[in-house]
Image 1 (spheres, rainbow, N blue to C red):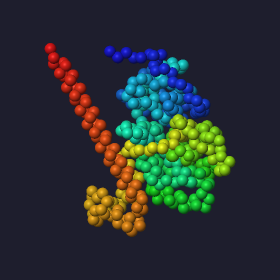
Image 2 (spheres, rainbow, N blue to C red):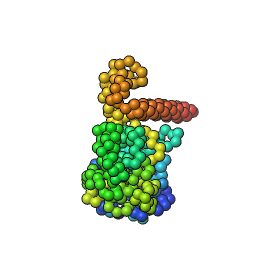
Image 3 (cartoon, rainbow, N blue to C red):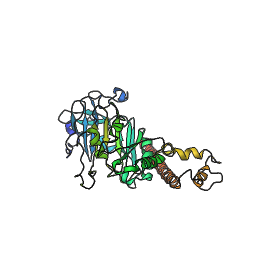
Image 4 (cartoon, one colour):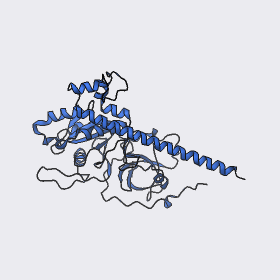
Length: 370
């Protein structure tokens, strides 16, 4: 018989975050709450909804529409790898002096990457996000990383928007740089933004009206925290001292924060991700490489791999200068990566199924013994 654990017997109280608590809007509606988020299968009796506003290393803060709380997480969630992430909606149990996350509600979108290292598991970066600002620093644009990031966002269910940060460094090259980015981010809005002089900030704020949530991703040093601080209008997230040479702060985020914007909407900052392995499928890749997909429709063979087949429209487009050879190489690389991921997932599923039936067989034999 399973005995429900009293909150006082929950995991030990988490250490408190070293960063000061952020100032939040006072209602669940302002945090994006939708009462239909609790499915009929979930028993919410006696529990209260809250949204995860900060996720650090074994640290969670949530807001329940009244106040922000540092909370513990029920042990069974840890055991099942269902830990809450920033942006999640959760149900809280326990007393005001010791709230505990009892369950994580279903996510309507999830920004997911493959966990770093050799493990084949998903790592959820952010949940319940409507728009993702993909920050590409003007001084060090990386088209290949941008393609990878866009594939990740298309898979999440959110809408990607590319934000070229530190655009004041471009001078007269803004138009040329934006055109270069649009060649990679086909069908995606591209904005030039300078947190230093305020250019483009209003256009970014307009993407996150009341009731919507944005997330900011990009490499370390892309100006993500500086952008969030500029959108909020105060220094909420930490950056290092501003350099005198270019008036820039250095990105120092190590946790994920969800903060409100003046006039409504919320934005979630994320740490820079050095390793960005995909956890996606072919549909997300097609959304990123829509130009390759459209050209491929004219290939002679429907299963053309665009390597050396006769009548390949994609290879012809490269030869004619219509499609960039580096972009095709990037498409091939990401396609191989996703195919490898699918094979590894298939092996894991087969192993899990084998273990399940072995367990069932053992249990059946045990019951049949006199």
